[in-house]
Image (spheres, rainbow, N blue to C red):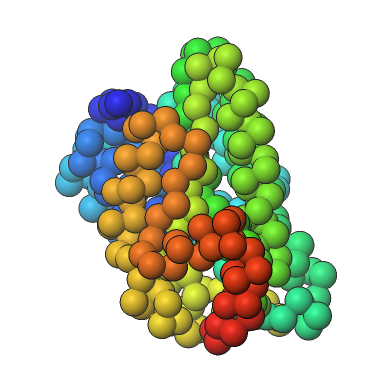
Length: 265
Ligand SMILES: NC(=O)c1ccc[n+]([C@@H]2O[C@H](COP(=O)([O-])OP(=O)(O)OC[C@H]3O[C@@H](n4cnc5c(N)ncnc54)[C@H](OP(=O)(O)O)[C@@H]3O)[C@@H](O)[C@H]2O)c1
């Protein structure tokens, strides 16, 4: 089992929800923490909370939508703090709009934040991990990264892309002592549906019942960190909704019958 004591970790999307919960649990394990997000005030709250448990926590504010900001942030981190041990690509936004009504600019925005920012950050940190002969990369996909779901066409596409990219990376980086885990959360009780964007790019603003009745972010973080510690390729995290993954895999006809009848929110 990997220990994170005194290891430098970078978590994106750390200002709320799953990322915040992961951050606080890793802080309690004595990791040195770098947190990233877009909302500076929320990052400061998390940083202060973090410093109650660990001696080192710094926040970096940048927009995952902007590739040059993401690259610049990675360069700044490397020059200020040196190589990181663990990168958790977790920041993201969801979607609530029909594919046919969604302008391509919104599709691209979702892909940029939920997929390309992960690729940019990861590529920036791999060379120093190779040099150190150790390192760990994690990426947050979704149950929607295992099958399509109403109103989430580009979100689901971005989350599927994470699986393809990071599974490949796992194979390619093994010889350098670098491991990769992809997490597939189901319904987790965070603000993801409130922050999800609609066809006009505006926030959905509604807490979906699936989220409010979902697993807590803290419980999700516990499973996520455990999977990293064990070096697992993937981890599905959630409650009874995870059965849909198994249905899709083993009983696809039944899956499509059921999923077609689910009332989408
Ligand atoms: N909750 C679920 O049911 C669920 C299920 C499957 C997968 N996931 C995935 O889990 C990850 C975390 O989501 P969450 O549930 O914790 O939701 P959340 O509470 O809305 O957190 C999203 C995080 O992503 C950051 N973020 C969003 N857009 C950003 C941008 N353009 N630039 C920088 N940071 C940005 C947010 O930062 P700011 O607030 O600072 O902007 C926030 O820290 C996401 O990748 C999501 O797709 C969640």
